[in-house]
Image 1 (cartoon, rainbow, N blue to C red):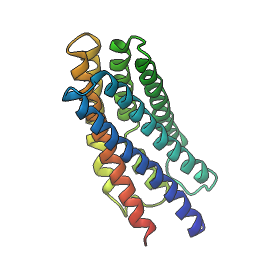
Image 2: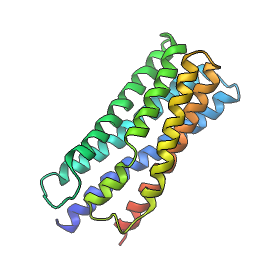
Image 3: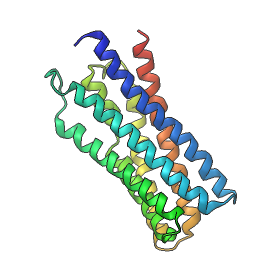
Length: 206
């Protein structure tokens, strides 16, 4: 593969991860504001939209990167490994955005926001490891360890978000637990996005 094309593909992945990190930071601030009592219902809805948009942007970036690699025939990762994770991430992102918008329109927010947390947690858990697999496709797996370090925590946080969402859905301090769930999800986005963006930026600079 030409070095210029390889660089463009890595830039796409870095851009998606950068948007993921920015979205995580924004959602983190929104969740904290909600937890300290500043318009919690509004903060919840906006945070759900921001987190969903971040998942969607990163998923589309990975999908675009993978589509460009698809015809090369030099990879060791199956289509199912990448495609399944990307599909789940994109779908969970879309669902979270829709649920967040509906909650802002006052459509049963007490149920939709915890469901959004569950969806976000499931998306993060089931799509964890996409950066490592994309690094493998770029033949970079042995040259960077930053994304790998984020995978385990991302899965654990995703599972925690699911649990918090379920507890909120059954009526256990729904607003507080949903805000905490969004806070945890935003931290996961921030850590993952920073790790991948930093690794790709270093490789692009070589």
